[in-house]
Image 1 (tube, one colour):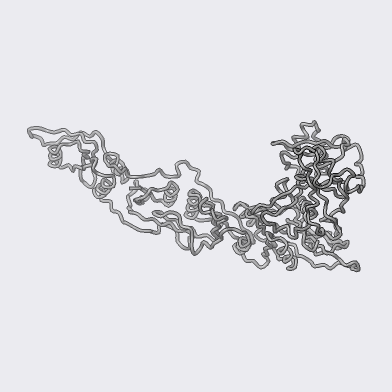
Image 2: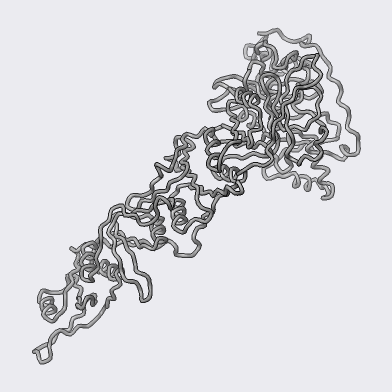
Length: 640
């Protein structure tokens, strides 16, 4: 045979361990082909598998979700297929990097081409209604078609959510006019055809498929759920808040929220039962859901969660009664509001599902205690108390914001700016606290303020509205460094002194031999004195004449800095200042925030009938958010 021909793909079934299946008495599926593998199950349905090497940080949910969006129902179906294909994996929740797995590929669905369905590949932007409209389905018939699509395609559990690139089976007119054909019973064929090559033989590529043994019959996996009729006296139960019991797999009747199945002995006729209390009410449920959604986590309270146990049983949880917080790091918190799940079920869940934590809120206090219990199992890099060691923003203007929790979701949260503060505030915060919360948002700090109402046992996130009026952030004020006329004009305007430009001053007395007319760059009066600004344009003789005539010459040449001009003009105007370090401008321990400022404080009279102006001079560059904050406090801030 030519040496260039590739060797036939060896059957992967031969390489799989020959251990017993996860279900007693059930043979593992026979796996064929090299890359994409498949197995036939009873009922004529063909399931496709593919090999996968576990990477660091991967969970089974993440691996299965790569092929299609998962729902609790779909996940239960997929994990059953996974257990059949991987009998050596005792704990699917504990996968090791580098581990080789066979996972359901979610490939194509094989059906007989009987004219009752037709395939359609979903394109980006498609919706089921758009697809039906393009196929000419009348509006009044679309609901019937949507129901049929869900029946034909088990992966479609939500008609508003389809995935681009996937192939859907759409019903034709024959689907509605003909009765659904019965599935033929599977037949068992010889495991290996007569012309199958021996291992090691060289076979042309076109002969590989023919060389693959036909599939064999595999007993069906046990169903995860079963229909259970309501028991006596349960007709008046509220919808979505059913009773919950622990049941053995014998036929039973109660409505359940939690079901644990176990292997019963043949002689057992009556199942053992243990009542699980469903939450009649869920205190602070609205606050908890809003809070964790605002943090960026998933709050799941719809559908059903199926948790297969090593014993072969399943725990079935109605998420409307026991919601789940799915954290970004992979941990999940199952919330038991009233502590209704028995301890033995909690222990079984914790032992089997390492990423799932049952959080009981039965004896919790207010909102803070409940939030704290959930945060303990979040898997975050850091959750610290922010009351005794609050976050402090800024230096010249420092803002301390105590919060109940300081959260770093990852070790890079500080570098990436993903720092989150959870802070309890009054239902109606005072204007100062609102200003500080706006300041934190402007500088990139995420603060989630919440209010707690113990009377109603509920809470809510407090909204912090941004000021909508234009010009709310004050214009940055800074004394010109270079001095000169710009510095003179800035300071005169700041301290409220009127200046005149182009003023013609006549120097000399009546009867003198001559009179001098001077036009200074700036002229102003303050404190009973007349000032003439000299920008190094006047000669010494003219300065002398001006002084002799009762004017004060105010030098503002290129050698005078803006800071020097500011100090001399403040002295001329009689404006005093006080140096303060970390002065508590507003807030305090009871207010829940502190704003401290280091700088030179001065007070100026405002306009007639107006309030006094408060100004602080600082020696650093000031952020616009800081100017807005001090503006909310009624303080002007000036860099000098």
